[in-house]
Length: 394
Image (cartoon, rainbow, N blue to C red; front, side):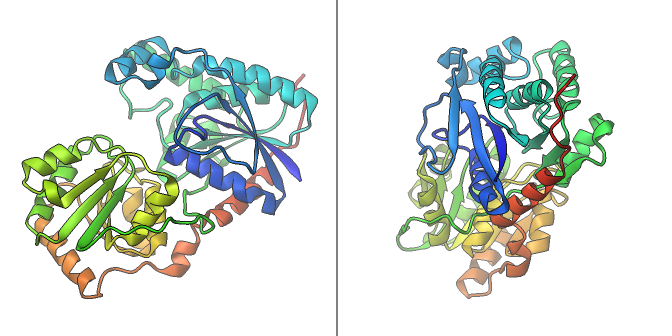
């Protein structure tokens, strides 16, 4: 077995789509000759720590109020920390990682963003040890034009930091081409050293048995972020459908219940905050149809879309025509897609009628198989094999 050091934060027991990606990759890497050790932060959360991988946790020195607070804390953080509030954790991770690399031989380092501090720690470890490092991007939120910065000075400092960090990367991966294109546009020396490693589904994960009750159920799982306009458009269209057409939102969706009550369909819309991943998968498979709402940018594509497609249930997707999600659904099928600004009432009514009659969209099984995470892990292993060999710095 070759040995891979994975720098990951967040990591279970904290839960997020990103932790799911990393877990799935390291679960399947041993089948391709790679054994992982995870370097992460001390954390609490609703998830369960994995028992199939060695995990080393280091202390977080930032006050919990700044890490877990609301909008006010985020504003404070944007002023105090570059690139993110875990930048101080990167120092403790670097110290622990250097001791580990001095004591044991590792063949590669892998870190998965969007917490930019993981790349900061991984770059320091690569520089100190000579072990080749691969930087993985799940979005563009390190130094880019997506997130607002406290001041132009903060933006410039973050950009300089990312450029310096990526000078130590042997390769860069991302979940889709638009993200990679944006990275290479900023850092052209990476051209030729980039790889698309998509998100996907894991066919080995079990779904809990669930029952939604009578009626036709739409299910949405995960965060809604700042997508009030398409949410309101969907719920308005839902209100025009028969009373037995209902919706369940699972995850961080605080705006759903007030909006449903305002539209007079509070009895037809359910919201559940956080559930175990197996339960979320169970809800997806118990649904009559699944709802997807993405952002408007070219790289927009929620990782849940792969679980949705694997569930076998038809998708109703609100996404930009040229988004990564729209392109994926055009490739795989299984969905009706509409633009954010479209009037959803007629498309939604037609979609429900088609699904009820057995004529809903169906995904192409062969096209979908490309996104089984066992196969994506094999792609990652192949990239790791081609990284430059270990070379101690002078």
